[in-house]
Length: 434
Ligand code: 2M8
Image (cartoon, rainbow, N blue to C red; front, top):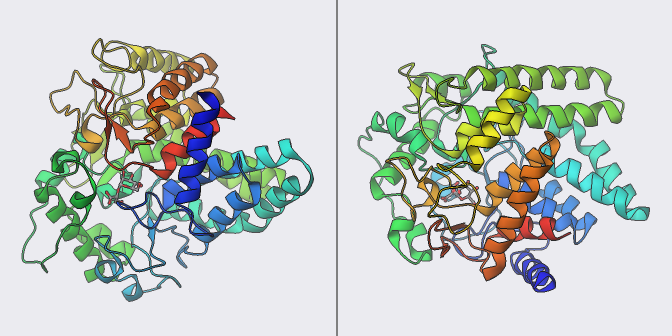
């Protein structure tokens, strides 16, 4: 079984490989996505360090002059909507060299750098050199990305990252965003046809049409100001401080800081470690003492966005005081989350089954996402929670035993949902198996 799972995961990644980049999934997502790339590179490094390096290199080639790493890189024609014709990145005030989307996603890239480096060193020889040369050569690009996030997305230094579209959070239709989206009221807009619903078993596994109208409305709003960050901040209808993104920036900046130190960039290291501390504090301050969960904030209304979603566990990603971590671990394994009596596998659902918004089959509103289980397990190991990491891994591998490498799973029935042969699911399996 074990060997079969690793072989099948490797076959999925080979099947989605275009040579220099891996598409996020064969039909639903036929392009390179930013945070998918990082997770995918972690998995691929277990097969080939040079190929993992190529994966990250191709993403970095799409970096905007500002430092932003765009959330999608379009390097071939496809029916994916919204494609480059709607995003129109070429209209940006300072446009990127390649055709891309005009927003970003959470910065998990340094996790991939650390994993590639570790695997290169474990293997030794040319793999070690490839990994070290790659990190040394591309460090300035990654530094620019984290710097851009810290400056442009938290200009007042609150230690929380602001986002301008729920696609930036990566958790597109999570209940986290129900309130801010209730305030997004699309006006006249160019017509569009969704293509995503063609690639899933049932339409209800994807966001609604109403949600999509809002998603595209926000894209049009950004194009209208030619992706000028200042103007977007003032005009965009969706403007939210994202606590999970912030936790990932805290983690990422800490790793980049460690790498900068190791590769002899002393000043950059100090700067990144200060960024990490700032966002760790921002996340800690966002924890609701009553529920023990971290909360997002709507920046248009100032309202706190309480939701029983995965983002509540942001401190488990960023790191926090021992008592906060202990309480969060207990909550995560408790009856409202992994320990819920109806769950088929004890891995975190995207929304608590005890919450009224829980929808077991709809995308980020309930299903379990293996890549998120991997992220929590990796972070737990780093934050001194080896036991939690081991439990998550064990349960996740049972879930992945169906060999569908689904994008997400129904937490109660264990049924595969969304795309099949999703690259980041296969990558998670490979890393766990190594
Ligand atoms: C999903 O998002 C894209 C838009 O970015 C989509 O639905 O078309 C999300 O799950 C996102 O987190 C992920 O990166 C992407 C590709 O796997 O798909």
